[in-house]
Image 1 (tube, rainbow, N blue to C red):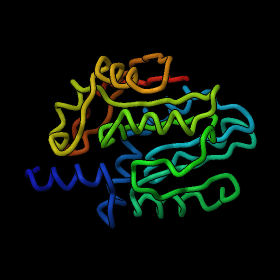
Image 2 (image 1 turned 90 degrees about the vertical axis):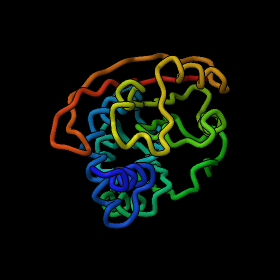
Image 3 (image 1 turned 60 degrees about the horizontal axis):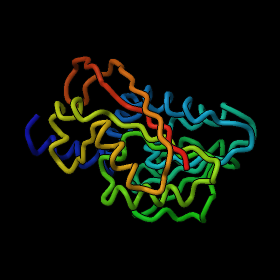
Image 4 (image 1 turned 135 degrees about the vertical axis):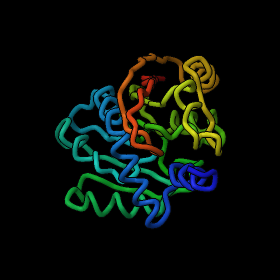
Amino acid sequence: MEKKDLKIVAQNLANPQGEKGIEIGEMMNATNIGMTMESIQTLLIEDNESILEIGHGNADHVKSILNKATNIQYTGIDISETMHQEAKMRNEMFVNQVDFVLYEGKKLPFGDKTFDKIFSVNTVYFWENPIEYVNEIYRVLKDNGTFVLTFAQRDFMEKLPFTQFDFKLYSNIEMEEMISKSHFKRMKISEREEQIKSKTSEETITRNYTILTIKK
């Protein structure tokens, strides 16, 4: 792929827009589903809990969250108008249990201690002020809640041609250092490996990623 094409891919991974964004959203769901399902499993969702997902994409996976327990309330938040509309369309049958919120990407538009569980997969690369943003997550998480943050490791991401465009990459050590500067006090690191199809070619590649389980 040429540089201009890689830049378009990078822009749509950060903020999917229009027809190309819908296509990228489908691809992201397919390539990220393993990381997403592992993250949902790590949340240990229980009955009557409220769940927040940051950066939900097309939200084709939401039914899996609702099936984890009874009386679950799911909120998804995203900066992409395209993904916001796609998510609502794909989950209209769950209208009483799900809510999708469009926002500007900095302040979470929720009250203090609103959610039992919060998770985010492959979004941290785009956080403008990551420590401030993590403190926003801390603010809206209940005192006994869990925040699961999942990301592909720096050494893997550096091999991808599109991450040269506005991606902030992290090793486990760098991520641990960033979280330690926030209000959160406890963190567990779990490393995983999976085989995925490349976003820019037909080949299969090995992705190393990390799931952080973070608590107050």
